[in-house]
Length: 443
Ligand SMILES: Cc1ncc(COP(=O)(O)O)c(C=O)c1O
Image 1 (cartoon, rainbow, N blue to C red):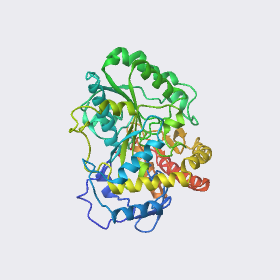
Image 2 (image 1 turned 135 degrees about the vertical axis):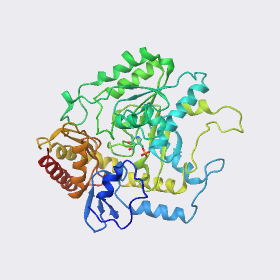
Image 3 (image 1 turned 45 degrees about the horizontal axis):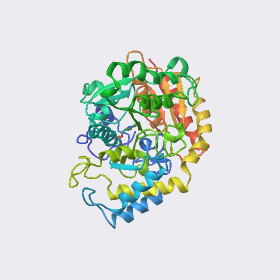
Image 4 (image 1 turned 90 degrees about the horizontal axis):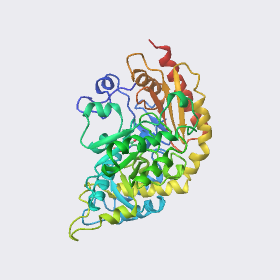
């Protein structure tokens, strides 16, 4: 716990139990590499890469320098009917990193905006093809696609849906890929369960008709609901079914993009090419807000029609492709390449897997699952109070010097890519201490 230098009333904190936090504020004052410092100088290791975004470590000098140079050259320029070189350069580079054919890039400021943008592109695409009746989106239970109205409609995170009703867009949902009976302590991808994808063809398409469906939107690995890893072959099957029925497939790679799976995109790691990829977070190493959608060229080209003086897609944000964000992202792409960060993740992943699975057998741990540099450690819930133990464990981890997050009763562990095996061990040691602490206090 850290003392607050200021009054806390005015700031309505996002995704935070405000009343509890303000009773017991936990502040971060500075950061470097894999380490935050509290205002009193206490070390807090970053076990969640900020919020799944600081893969290259905090305050990377090359990113800081690029941003400094940019702010001294061009602080702001809109990309509405004028442009600045950084956005074009960045888009070209992103297109080169994307799977073949996905070489058109729409820039936004966040993952939520990226998801809503991908959904609007899908709607506009079908309209342009004379199929405007395709306006149903298929997501997945326990999927998270940000907080825009599109994202919460297609998302399957219970609390978002509970608070905001069924939202605005028509949607239906596949079952989550999580099966506690067979996956509780699975290492990497489960070997069985690919057939969970068949529900798209056996239930959803017959119920709604393929001609109603605008797109299927999934995270390759569901991150925010506790790291749910797709079975081997599952994403391939989804792709095949989408192809058979002419459906667009959107991968939300807000968490998986830019290294966390040991490749630049999860599409590459899993060998499945979607029609659009939504990205954000790690693309700037968290140093500035930026997101975007990589779009298959045919989708883009279909929309390049209408009166030549009118925008082909009536969509965009004031800060879409902000110069400072583009400078941060370009520097991050240099760092990813020069420091071989995806390769480092791939090399570190086996050690990471062993380390997190060493928590199996710790009292209260009911599941451990992992892929790349992401793991979910699930705790038995307090009877009648789901999420309470997770929240307590997250707070205890902070007090033991580790930043993590607990969606529900699962502790999510996703450290920076620059960690050494010894860093991972130190972090897992603190996770262990936090878990023991909260299970000792169990009611
Ligand atoms: C898979 C996924 N999609 C979308 C989002 C939303 O991104 P943002 O918070 O940048 O709007 C998140 C955020 O965690 C995410 O994990």
